[in-house]
Length: 204
Image (tube, rainbow, N blue to C red; front, side, top):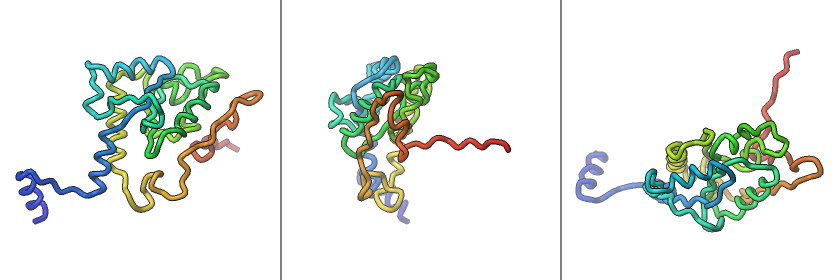
């Protein structure tokens, strides 16, 4: 009976949705990325916003020049240890709710420069990454697929209960410690609340 009523109201132009669904729909379709790039992946990010791929179809074409106006950080390219503190600082300046997308092999794991002493082996060591977009570099279609995956994730979020997002949990910090360049390496080597090194089981 309820489905019949919904169907009849829909035919008359009346939509019935929950407040949670409406809230998540509004947030997922109005993502404002932060306009900055680190390496060659940023060229693909720019191409995704042009007319051929038209990122505007997904409500994410408004690249903001200020982190205080953005809610999506696309880490596009190689993150050097010298640049990592600046990326975390930009993340801290973004208002909640905010999301992070690691675009390209370099941002995910260091890519072809993983063995280099000056390249961070994944931005997820310092920032909570919501979506990984693999490739070297990933094409604009891959970035759009990553954006759609983030939209689906936002649509599944609950406003109440233990599974609610971080910005709705009292006492959860919205800022993360900014790493510094030490005498030999970046310190700390990772943020423990975000990432922990995998345990290696050694045969006895």
